[in-house]
Image (cartoon, rainbow, N blue to C red; front, side, top):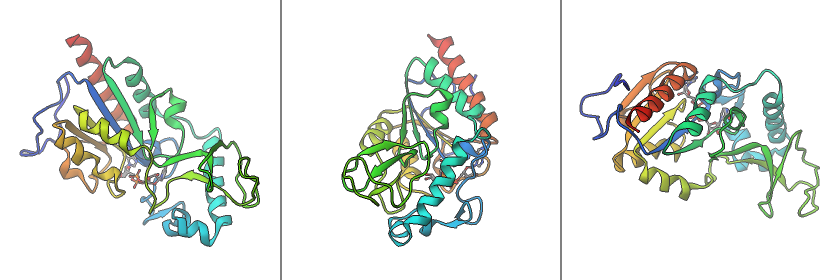
Length: 258
Ligand code: NAD
């Protein structure tokens, strides 16, 4: 039986946990990868790995110092490809949900790492891009990247040096595949946000769309997010513990009602 922990009176959606769901949308943030050894973004006073966001995650920062920005993402990529970073129990549980849930599951991640895919997820939207891809700033063409990107690399499509950038959506840019995400939100009956601080829009506004669609909404986080009041249900704790438990509940409710 699915629990109703920390459900605030007056915040209950019409739906509740314990029901059989048909269409689930899951949003993940940096918190789900924290236990895999990848630092979150706001954990260190608004800095991302000791850098100001303006310097490493904006188009203006890239224009001002492309060498620094490439170096920043090269280091993130090297870390991601090292043996120490592996999918954790939360990533694995979501892959199990995708494989075994009889309804639809859409996983939308703000993360640029590939830990969901490495855990076995196939249906993942990377709304903020992917660290293991580069993009030609002229044509938009994408290329897989297994090593560093440097300012003097020559792009395969335009044959020019300096046109490759990380395939990462920076502040001030429009996230990817938003139509597909909003379509899914407008049809979902369960929305779960995992390990995201609710500070970065438009992702922080997804819960509002799900509430408007009549979905049950659940936040899993170590601490209350900036948009926690919008959620009907909150579960506090480590993603590696809370997510496998939720997945077990969703799969057992569904197998009982089939
Ligand atoms: P955030 O860093 O702003 O917030 C992380 C949230 O996760 C916090 O609310 C924190 O309380 C929670 N958290 C931390 N550890 C947790 C755990 N073990 N279990 C459950 N919750 C935990 O993250 P955000 O909201 O995703 O925004 C950060 C932005 O920076 C994203 O857009 C993303 O593109 C980028 N980013 C990505 C990565 C990555 O790809 N892994 C890492 C850092 C930043």
